[in-house]
Length: 174
Length: 88
Length: 164
Image 1 (cartoon, rainbow over the protein chains, first blue to last red):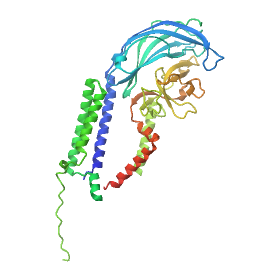
Image 2 (image 1 turned 180 degrees about the vertical axis):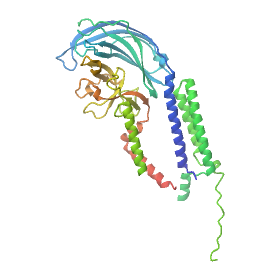
Image 3 (image 1 turned 30 degrees about the vertical axis):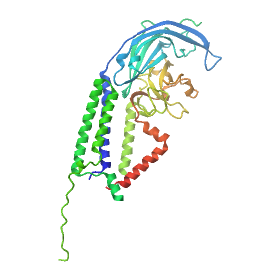
Image 4 (image 1 turned 90 degrees about the horizontal axis):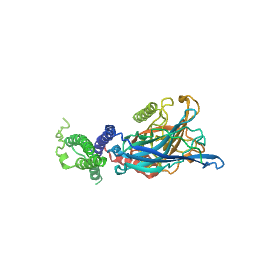
């Protein structure tokens, strides 16, 4: 004879297999959406100020201040499995030895499709400094607007929505 | 008394009912999964998908798990006890 | 008993194989803190892999799980800065990382226990995939020990009621 416990066991096993298949299908469906939206990125001003290190007050430290305009329509990135968008602006340069430096200077979390039309006139949110404490020997930098699409379930994907055409020099410290 | 409590908890059904429950639950769950995916995808909404999946699974559980009388219409018929004559 | 042992060993084997493929010591982790909200909540399950040293570097925007010496639990945060230093040969260069939680206002330097930068040896893996809620069971067991006993009690009761 078949007891209630045995039926609960059977049905819940089938149900969890089905749920797993459903989640896998949702995760895979993300790859059907191949939107690659592009936006405009303009760096309006780069300034360097001399200051003090925030941890070691006796050490001098140069900080770069960057003003930028960003406008991009990222609504195509929102599909049924998009939980949020992590949008970030980074500076990229190679030091004298050729070592790559990538520094995120601004970011924003976009949680709703209605907010995905980005129009920002802003300046860097995070302290922008070089590992050598000064920008004297740092060559001109490129800036890029990148995004990370974070799903409800499945794989994280990355993309680039904009990039400066020419590199920008760091001026002398003020 | 203790025995009847045990019976309620066990909620037994007969063999025909058991096969019906197994078949219906398997087919229904597959159909539910496929339908919830397609409808959710069409409407581009995960909440629709999980509302359909969760809601219909709940209905399915209520329909199939309790020992409803319809699953108990084929009680096992035991063979009659054969009287053996002792002391032959 | 033998059955139980075989379940445990096959589980361990799968875990180690997955670890070898993805090049990390723990390919699946449970989020334990809320510092990456609203991206990850406590109890979400993360799937990790680690790029091998030669083939690829870590990039900004990557979400890494890292473990600095002296820290009690691994931390899941996003890479804010990457700096290559050292040799002229690209493959031999060391990469220094700075991370930040999406939900934290400042970067993680204070979490590094005196280190200035994070290095490859501290990184457990990069987050590649995501499954919500599933890991919450383990957190619930830790937060509410009564739950563990309730679960054990329930299983015991079931065993008593069972007749077969």
